[in-house]
Amino acid sequence: MMRWNQNTTLVVAAIVATLSVGASIAVVTQDRSTTIKKITDSSDDAPGLAWSVDAADIGLEGATFASPRTGSMYAWQAGSILIDHTALTLAVVSSESGNDEAVMVGIDTANGSVLWKTPAPDLAACADEPLGGRLVCHQPIWGATPGYVTFDPITGESRNYPTDLDLFAVTVANDRVYTTSGDLEAGDILLHRGTLENPSADWTVPLHASAGWEDDYATALKVGDDIGTFDVGGGFSTFDASTGRQLWKTDSLEDCLGAVGRTAGDLAIASLRDCEGTSTESKGSAAFRSDGTVLARSDSPVVQQPSLDEPTDTAIPIVLGETAFDRNTGEELWRDDALSYDFPGDELNEPRTYATLTHVIGHVGLLQASNGTTAIDLRDGEHLWQAELNGSIIGRDNDLVLTSAGTDLSAVDVTTGGTEWTASTSMMFPDDESMSFELLVDATEGGYLVQSGSKLAMLQPLP
Image (cartoon, rainbow, N blue to C red; front, side, top):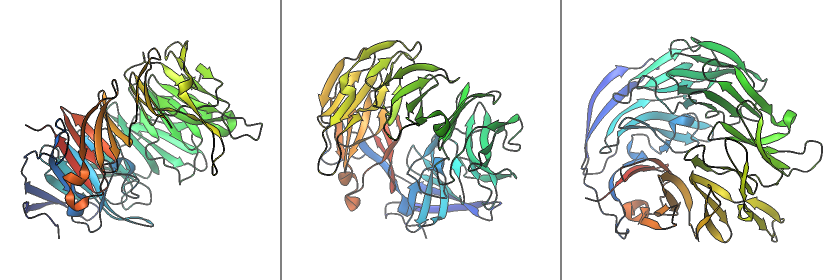
């Protein structure tokens, strides 16, 4: 039985279809008020609460929200995928061995109406981008119906596209489905590009990759207009998105590289390891072009790994160690000791040097150390401001970043350090005073779609 508050009218309209997995879609309509409510004790410029959906009201006892991107088999984190005006998210009931129950849920972002819910067992991962307007996911070889699974964002209808391939990563780009199959532990991997009906309709090529099955490979495959990458375990590969031709491959053991990550301009950033010695510290870092040639290198042991890396374009320099380099030419542009922090050690920890560049937002880099947060203009190295920036950054809206510190939610302008607005989730949800939002799903026209494991909510400007 679904549980809704007393002000919500729930009408189960129809059971519209029977799925190949033997389950049905529940199409749901809700009579919801779209009145935007002022949040008590929030700042004057803060948005109000337009609507919220609680995972506990989806119909599964003990359910939490989980990201379709990482599938329904294990609840790695909360998240939603937007297709037009529908937010698609998973509601799962977790146990020590994985998720016992899972449904895909479609939520109308205009008013928070739960449009439908569809059984979604054994999903290994879903693609960020839709294909033909539908969400594309896949079940592994040990699932009930191995192969691709799609969900219609309007009706919730699910369709299965069986295959004998042992698929384990999937993404959509260039109006095609890209996927990988094979044995990761043996390093016997194939990369496919094709259609839902035929995963290899365009081509199948070998792909350099190896990892343990316990690694997180659901989001390891990424494809842009021209270049694709596969980053899992100790291996990193780049390939031509049109032909699948291998452009560059590297292995952490063979090439003494580690911590490979992608950044704008089709650059890969890797730390340099000392494979002949016993030290585990980095010997430096390097930026590689898509063909594996070195664009720039730093001998500093500090390796910058910003958790949010969203430069405006390739005109924004890249930072290796304490030095900024031109992303196109590799020319050294400026240097700043503030890009590292010497921790003196304490009774529990040895002294060490930390990288401080934690976020790249447009042309601004945020450096975080014990003395607070410093914002730096990456174009010329100018320090813009310094302040305490409490909490973790859960997303960005142009020059604003949303920070979450306990139940406090704030929007900070990264160009000035000024706080645009503050609000408290304990005031939004008095019955769940300890709840805090974990990520920003979408930001548009002053509205913020935010999510935690228990709630999906829309904040919008007050009229």
